Image 1: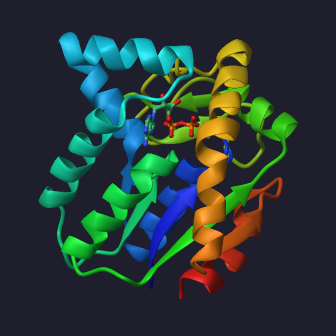
Image 2: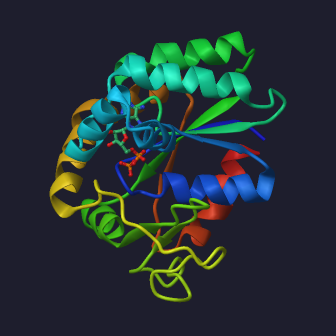
Image 3: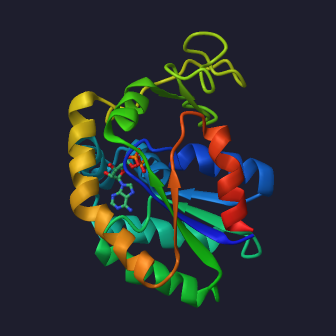
Length: 216
Ligand code: ADP
């Protein structure tokens, strides 16, 4: 199996596919969004800076994200394949990420671009719920990912929460940030022959066979 980098607009399903592949194939799922949310929850000066930027829909400075990423990657089992969910997220993050790969002796990776239309991504954002305890993701507007009982985690019965950047207003800013900062990195990976495109379908499980063909 290849290492994977997911690139996508907000709420396209990076986290959902990552969780599915982690469960089925033992991938280490590295989400910079999750690393930043954990740092934010410490509520120190750095946490407050991160919190402000994330809830405004803007990107967090490269230095902060890359430091969190490097510290996290150092601690994981080096024999495990991994999924990068959320990084690189702008052109200036490409070289540092590829440098980390180089230091780890990794060259068998694939970049999967999840192509999703604006309306679908907006709807997913507004329905998204997460378990604060076990981090399992749900969506109240999806038959596939609805919790069995309203607002409760199927696995640990904890009350589900909504991310504070999952509002219509912040989604629009996140989408604009994606268009100006993240979309240009797609061209780079296309040029070096690493890019694969997936058109996001209504049900995540229907996309899985195509993703599996790409990563084998
Ligand atoms: P989504 O892809 O649904 O927007 P994420 O959890 O990946 O959600 O990211 C949430 C927020 O975290 C982003 O809007 C941004 O503020 C911040 N973030 C995540 N990854 C990065 C990154 N690589 N560089 C800068 N900011 C990031």
